[in-house]
Length: 299
Ligand SMILES: [Zn+2]
Image (cartoon, rainbow, N blue to C red; front, side, top):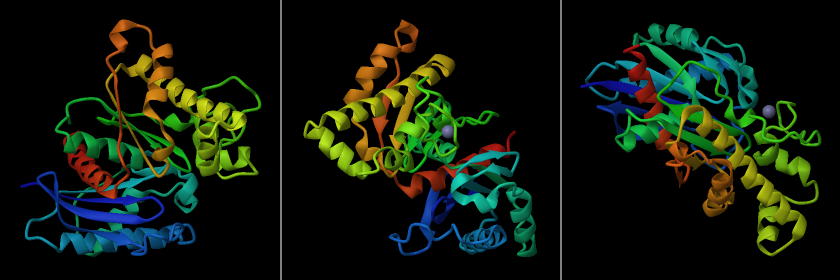
């Protein structure tokens, strides 16, 4: 039997124990109150590491078999166990998370290797695992405050798909990173609030449905931007499966996206892509974090 622990840390922490690639028991969550959205932003990095360790230790003690691998998924640029950039958990920037967590865990008698990855990649891994397609290319867009891009199987790289340039218009400057023309600067929740100072994004999408010209124009731009980014990844890595999830996936109208994509992908070998909406759930990402950590053992 293979045993792993998967942990996802976004605006909250969720952790679960996997046996033979399936979650066992119930997941742990911090904070327990799901309405509390910014519980982690004020917690210093070293305390976050302690919290992760205590979640892992609780789950490690839950079963008889020893833990083979521990997977941690966090938003941002993560390479070689180091969180190089994490806009929403900025206290983690530069943290050698794999090394620090391993150290705290070994003090608790847990010596399984710690693998740290990106949260969107963990969702892609979780989707691939639950659909029995671990041998196929799986890509995920997460639509929320920021725009995340995840892929399975893991390949070395940065893969900040949310910051891909989708327009040459110099007025497109709402991306949180400061870059001009970025996908997140059009689609991200924060960026939409900056663009429409007089209404919330939910109102923009609702008014577009009712025929408001300015809102309709924007909602079309929003879908065209996502189509452009998806088209670029199809032209780079080929067709295949794309999944769409995240807090704001409800804004997405799949037929509209598909219509734009069809105008952008014209080479016939590239037209066999599939698009699917998935409601966001923590379990898929927790599973993916664990599966990624097990897979990393074989590299
Ligand atoms: Zn950007």
